[in-house]
Amino acid sequence: MAQHTIDMSTNTFNLENYLKAAKVDVEAALDASIQVVYPEKVYEAMRYSLMAGGKRLRPILCLAAYEAIGGDSQGDASRRDEALRVAMPTACAMEMVHTMSLIHDDLPAMDNDDYRRGKLTNHKVYGEDIAILAGDALLAYAFEFIADRTAGVPAERVINVVKRLGHAIAATGLVGGQVVDLECEGKTDTTAETLTFIHMHKTAALLEACVTCGAVLAGASGADLAKLSTYAQNIGLAFQIIDDILDMTATTEQLGKTAGKDVAAQKVTYPSLWGIPTSQQKAEELVNTAKAELQSFGSAAIPLMALADYITARDR
Amino acid sequence: MAQHTIDMSTNTFNLENYLKAAKVDVEAALDASIQVVYPEKVYEAMRYSLMAGGKRLRPILCLAAYEAIGGDSQGDASRRDEALRVAMPTACAMEMVHTMSLIHDDLPAMDNDDYRRGKLTNHKVYGEDIAILAGDALLAYAFEFIADRTAGVPAERVINVVKRLGHAIAATGLVGGQVVDLECEGKTDTTAETLTFIHMHKTAALLEACVTCGAVLAGASGADLAKLSTYAQNIGLAFQIIDDILDMTATTEQLGKTAGKDVAAQKVTYPSLWGIPTSQQKAEELVNTAKAELQSFGSAAIPLMALADYITARDR
View 1 (cartoon, rainbow over the protein chains, first blue to last red):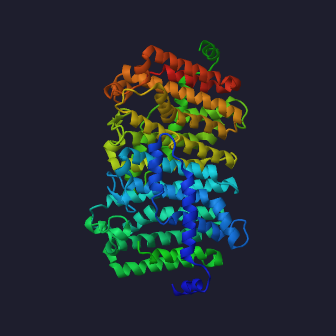
View 2 (view 1 turned 180 degrees about the vertical axis):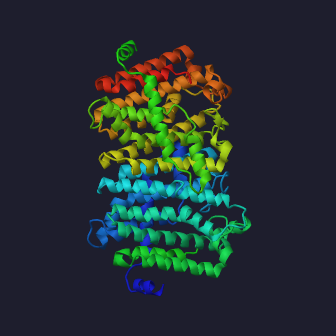
View 3 (view 1 turned 90 degrees about the vertical axis):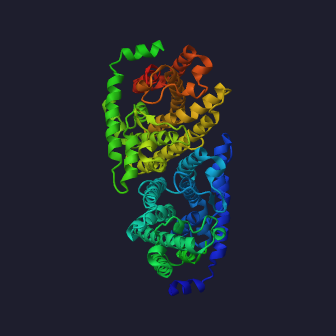
């Protein structure tokens, strides 16, 4: 890990400022993406969860991947401008899809959670029926938003984005991960292989879509997409390992959601299988492998490098 | 109505054979669209509802709209071949979306139905959690399927299809209609205007997407799309009026779903507002208006004409 850390410390790149600025941009775009019209209740429910905060890591990864490939632009500032202009609809769609998955996962028929990001979950505020429908609407709107708002790139790239996003959500992605996760509930003999399947689908698949779709819009080659896929899969898995560690070590207040749920549910996690120190080490190895994939992109990938580090260093 | 009926009776077109052949084609494509792999349960749940029969009216409308515009083909047989080749992925996606909406509408948190098409509803067989996820997966996969499988047309048309389909599902379409429908439950003062909003969104929006997306793939002009939109909105509303009449007059066995539900739920419907004869007459007027929109398409629109008649004549 030292090598990349040194690379970045000698650079002027400041992740904190980058994240702050990107989050402001993303939240402005999300805020503008949904107006409340009749029937108001469902639009309010969509906005309630979409605008509930969070790190906005998925849209930020999408924009950063566009920057790493660069599109038609010359120079860092114009790269950023172009990423915001071309990839923002897709970045917003990623957050809509992520929000949909949280709303549906929190339902009584699934994880039955009352709190998310320190606020009541969607169905606790709007009822189960509206929560299911708000999720469906966010999912469908995400695709409409990409198709309707993406401009300035060949149409084939937009179709590729739609294809990758659909694949990352369906039974081949998010849904498949959640199904296996539900199947493992209350089981104490879940293997590391099954855990990895869950996280590769429930978490990594959408992160991979964020990164590869951003890159596709910027005209990435097949070879570059392969590297970015590996990067995203590795940080996705690392992200989940850290999540599981935080569930054991952080407070409910720090997390904004119920802490200690995995232990209470006797759920097998990486730290329960391997212990916390080994899990932490595995997460760091995954992040290092992820960063190694970015070598050939040079300084354009500094934000993606820093985002990988951020995932293992985060405390919530 | 007489004029079009005469037009068609002098023609060799046989709707029964057309529907039978189209249903066979659509069901073969649907059957091939989803393989059962790990985690099997969710794929089985998707297939259970997708392959549960039904008239396949939505994919058939999509293919018929392609035929009405004609794409690049010359002659009726090659029009049909081209429609099957180019529009079938979109046609299948329409049935996936329709199936998703049935699975989610039947959930205990929504309409709480135990039977659909004479079979147990999805959540009665697979549980609520899997039913929600199977719906989500069908929705996402529908978009992936269009983006991945559509070939032989300019990419811009595929993006247009994705946009229209998303719009027809989200709060601007299906979801918005279902939200208002839920809000009207148990209310005896629902107006005809509100009823029309519900049906224009819950039923007509997806039918409109079926017809316009088929036409978009075939390269329809804006003027043709406007005519086809009006056609689809009218038959959508007529379809729903007939559905409400059948709920009052047909048996559960005939419908394959619980009959008399609207009366039992004291739900306001067109026949409860207007009576059955007036409702029947309104449905026929809507169908005539729909068919009048198709005049300029000539004989290529005979299947769409016949499909409009079929909707008012059907008994389930």
